Amino acid sequence: MKDSQGNLVLGSTRWRRFAAVVIPATIAVSGLMAGVANGAVPVTFHVSGQTAKISADKLVADGFSQYGSVVQEKNGTPHPVAMSAIKDATLTNLCQSVTTPIPGLGNVTLFIRAGREDGAPVKAKDLLIGMDSLEGDAVFTNINIGADASELTAGGPHHGQAGLFGQEADRADITGVKQIARLTQAGTFALNGLSLTVSMDSTGCFAG
Image (cartoon, helix red, strand yellow):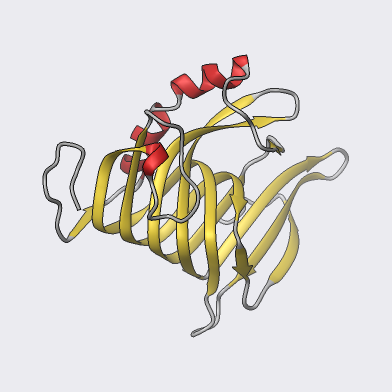
C-alpha cells in the first residue's frame, strides 16, 4: 500500500492518541460546511443534536476508512464530524450512554451495554460512526493517509466527497476506546449480552 506521495507503507503504525488521526479528517470538512449551507451537499437524514459517549475495552476493525463529513439537525444546524467506516468490527465491553436533562428530574442517562462476557463480543458489519472526538491506543496495519475520500473502499460501502482528505487501513486495533459520537449506523449489529439501564446524575460511560 502507498501513501499520498507514492511511497510504500509497510507494517503497522501506532499513535498514543488516536485523536491525532481524527484531526486532519475533521479539518477537511470546511468546504463541506459551505456546501451543506447552500444545498450543494445532500444530507441523507437528520441527527438529533445530542451526542453519545461510547467506550470499549477493545475495538478490532477489519477494513477501516476515515474521512470528514457534515451532519445536520432538523432545524438546519450543521455539525462537522469525522466519519469512521468499518467493514467488520468486534468490540469487547461496549458501553453507550446518552444524557438528557429532564425538567423536574435533572439529568437522566440511558446506558446500553453489551459484549462483557468472554467469548461473546459485540459484532457489527458495515459500521459507520460520525464522531466529534476519539481517544485510545491504536495500531493500524497497511495504512494509507491522504487518499481521496471518494475512493476509499477498505471500510465497506461508505466513502466521502471527491477532493477531500481520506485515509484507510487493512486493520485497526484500538484499546481503551473513548469517543463522542453523533450517529452510528450498521448493516448488522449483534449486541451479545445486551443490557439497558437508566441512571440519574451520571457522568455516562466515562467522565468528561
